[in-house]
Image (cartoon, rainbow over all chains, first blue to last red; front, side, top):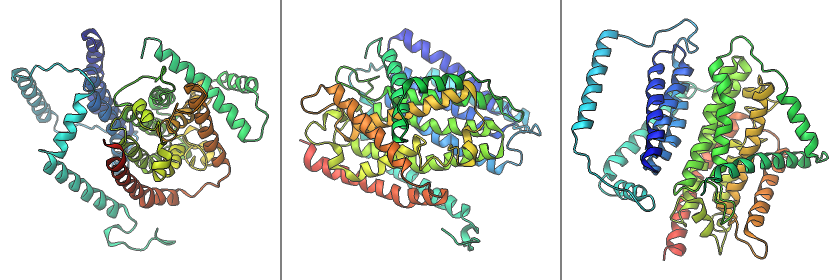
Amino acid sequence: MSSLGTALVFWPSAAIMLVTGLYVFRTASMARAGLLLLASLGVEGLIFLALASEFLGVLQLLMMSGEMVIMTFFMVMFMPDPGGLMGMDMTHEKRRSAALAVAVAVGLAVVAVVTDWPAQTLNGEAPDVRQIGFEVMGRSMFSFLFAGITILFAMVGGTLLAKHGGRLGLPAPGGDR
Amino acid sequence: MSAATPFAVLAVALGGALVVACLEQAVAGATVSPRVLLRRAWRQVDQPLTTARGHDAWLYHLAPPLLLLAAVVALAMVPWAPGFRGVELSTGVILFAAAIAYVTPAVLMAGWGGGRPLVVLGGFRFVALMLAFAMPLAMVITAVAAPAESLRPAAIVDVQRAVPTALVQPLALLLWIPSAMTVAMLPPFDLATAREELGGGAFGQYTGVHAGMVALAQRILVLALAGMTAALFLSGWHGPLLPPAVWMALKTLAVATLMLWAGRRSPRVELDRLLSLAWKLAIPAAIGAIAWAGLVTLLFYVP
């Protein structure tokens, strides 16, 4: 993509990402908050695409959809006021959390500016797919396996808790499937 | 890919949606008449929009465009002929899966935004169905991409020059068809949106342009999924005698007809059973399909 094309995708996407990210905490409705987060993180996929990281961008788009929909579900399930009809405020400890957020943002910005990023020109067919493959199957295999098994435990645990009767497995009325 | 490709994709979307609507008529045993269909579509679009109280207006109004966008992006990834490969990306099949994945939030938004018990329930039902069936769909995509060693749809078509994937990986095709029908909201998997279920479910409240967009998006989804099935499993544009584009069109039509016809001839199954089937049978089987694809690739495809 040309540098003009990159800029035309990058800056509006970054702006949408920040605005939707901000509104996640401005809305009282859990469904809106979850879907705004999906918009924010989905648009981040467009930024990856604009920066010529096709595989990561497409993967980000794919994964965020499912994950954020599930999260919206959990938020609607567990919050006492999912529709935000009582005007619930999603921010707590306002002053301290704002200070912490600003500090973290400044810290990350400093790291981003100070770091000596390697200057690489990308050409040819999707070099990142191959590199990610070798990374996952090589040096990073242990951490990915660990993360995978942790997620599997969480899935099994979540399913058991969601089962009727909880982890004790009390029989459901009308038979258990 | 050229500057005209997006317009060509849009033309395929609109023309193909009409063809799919005609196929629906034919499968239902009615007389096929594009003119009646267009007139009916116009009458629907001409209705005023529903703006009942209790809507989450943003989600309600954004859901049909998002659904349409997801369907068109999915369609754009389908390779139709050597000269017209849609929007060609080296990760095309993943973007296809990603576009399909955005059908879920669109239907959830339609359901939640509708603000009526049955409509909300329809949206939730669809999420449960999609989470269960999109998983085998995505896993099957990795399985059929393995022999081509590429995520580019055209490369997956080309690796099937000699033998179509449907013959090499029948299990993958067996898992793909019902999953694709779930994504396309076709019976018997349309528990979230059918008029006979929950009174239209997630889309129950839409009228006018909203309903028109939803109907169009559903037809485009059927077309995209049928086209991708032809490309990934039935060797796409390869075939003797006829020109490549004709082969691809014939295969797509055959798959679309099969999906529409099979749906009309099978009863709807209770949601719990469908979910149970997907999680306990289809997903483990999809892991088997991936293992089989790896074995076949190592034995026969890798030089």
